[in-house]
Length: 323
Image (cartoon, rainbow, N blue to C red; front, side, top):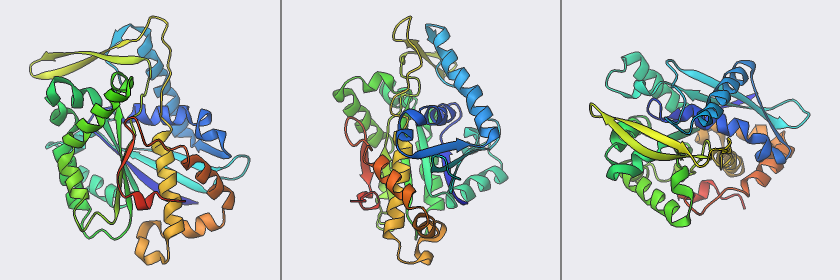
């Protein structure tokens, strides 16, 4: 089975696990309406079910600190993708690691693990703590989202790039900022400013031909919005509240990161001329040639990638153009 690695990026507690949980839980209601089936392995399924219970538990109280506890060690979430009723033929390996491995306290082994993961991943999914980006004039953005450390990591790993990569910025906890089109536009503007150095790196002449970047906001709960920040000893505590006493778990747009990932994979297949040029994704040509039904289903799914109201392709339109 062909395996693709996807690195989950974000500081500790930013919402990576919440994002992945919402993506998995909503699959059957979104992308699963095509002929695609996403099946987690036993360990991933058990862990995500536990996490789903925790996410829904955020709605037990009217006010709470939104989000799940971070992992203390690296963890793989394995999903097999294929046609419904048939043996899967593509494995998606979402690799999460503790956000502390991005900090100054990380050990050399932990830093090397992250570098190797980035080198071997066809895509990187960056979970963005939206209130930290948007509130208090972005005062907590550097602390919570660590854009400088992330930029430096990419600068060190994406050297001599010779194969396409996809970078997905996924603002989470963004319910407050997606109510109106003007709010979503402001969120997108703030993200471009908050990650300006990283986006400038991607736009450099040596990287521009290879890096595709998109923004896909995900409302991981859907009915819990940012309320206020309490600061204790220079550490922020973000508080959230339900939109009503009867509010239930209703994530929004959790399908979009996966739709863009599959669209990118299909484009790689359509564009490939020789395996050496595309390195770690070279075998996708053979995989998709043997799975024409998957190609058709992915094409159908990609047609629902959003490109307005906060969703956009920042760079690399050519690696997403499958018309």
